Length: 159
Image (cartoon, rainbow, N blue to C red; front, side, top):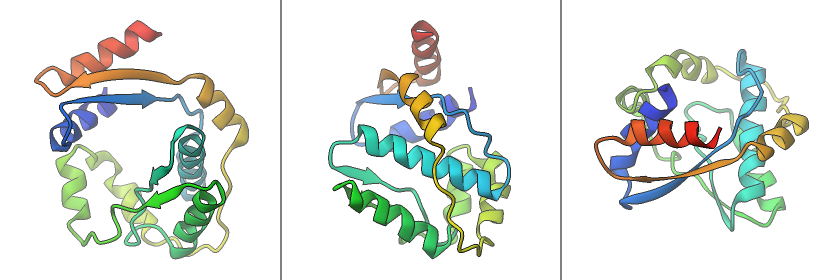
């Protein structure tokens, strides 16, 4: 439900009136910084398996350490994809904007990520990624007032 509400806040900001959203069930607990980085790298691996040419990396240098971002960029390049980093120029408004789209529950985790200084970049979870790829659900959503219900109804139909 929370994810549907967050998506509902993002959809009106998009240029398109009808979009397709892909959902995957990723069995990784994102508790703790190292597990969170494994979770992020596993999401990247899923995107690399299902993207045409471009991969959008929501990795801000205000939050993630440079070596983690460099590792993600190198991984994208090795798969002959083009990385796009839309958050490279964001400023301290990142947290205000995160609250605006419904990510206030994750603000504490984001604030802790700022302090990561480890040079040890964890890899993705191969078994979790393989399982997630099998759980793919694709739904279409049109810009409108009932986006949350449309998303939840579509996911319930596909289960």
